[in-house]
Image (cartoon, rainbow, N blue to C red; front, side, top):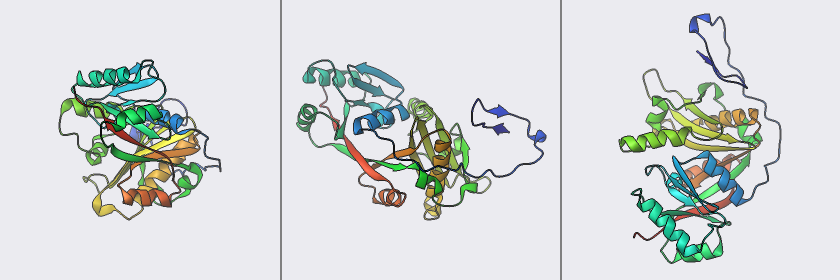
Length: 284
């Protein structure tokens, strides 16, 4: 049995020492304003919440590689000045990714990315994976929904949690990169709504707490368990835990062509802060 205190390291005790137990209600979240942050600032926070296995600085840019696991962890965060002329910087990016057998993706945010960068990248063709970055105060989110007693929190993603997450294709390098990225970040929590004994989870979620901000992601619900409030319950429990650690605002990233998820987040009070997409550099 593992006890997670509000501060300090987890404590492991033999289960036979347990005399009694009860369900602890969610942490009471006090009303607080959404933290003030610019799109660029929030995008940098998001980068810390999904840290690549390999990172390298190019001026103020950050090159990120993770064996191809997700574009976010395998693209350059091109914010600020790369410290060299733009064409030279983009060629450096292209060559860096080519040496790793990866395409050279550049993260472009609106507003936030410089006009010269956008103009240069527009020459290479249309963007990929347009994504909305949405924010909401934790107050309402923590109080949303019911079914909190169905949700379990843990510091690590166990095999059951991973079984409902996106497949990695069975490549050991990609699987190891996925584990590192998922568990990276300042304060990471994994939520699970267990299924019947011996069955996979009904739903999962992930939250990374970084100061006043909490990132929600990897919200997955079994198709046969949808529309039962599980996604809301997961996010509510994670929001309560984030508030307990001092956060007051939540953010998430959702692809623009996912109307079902967007409608869910609309109902939970999320609004769009900014957008981003990826530009693909020409191959050598």
